[in-house]
Amino acid sequence: MNLGHEVVGIAACNTTAIKLARAHAPDLGLVDLHLARQTSGAEAAALMRADLGIPSIVVSGSLHELAEADIAPVAMLGKPFNPMKLHAAIRDVDDGRDQLARAVK
Image (tube, rainbow, N blue to C red; front, side):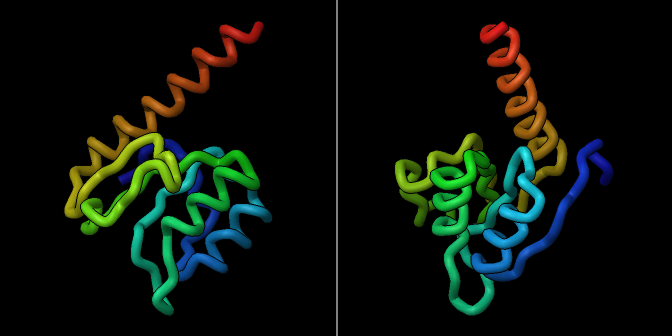
């Protein structure tokens, strides 16, 4: 399903996720909590937000393990998820960014 956004990369582990974020500076990260090599998507999301200012949507079958305060996701979706709910969450992030830009002008 094409939601009108460009995917800049797919990362199996948090090291790759952080490298991709630094290289491409995406507007948003879609992050699972459990990644390959027993790495943490939560750690990747926290670093992307703190160091790069990149917000994340958490998409995981393990939302019960998430301490929201650790990464401050802009949205959380449990697996399996409906693609339209993902689209709505991304649209909400885009709308919030647009409202902030208008308020600053």
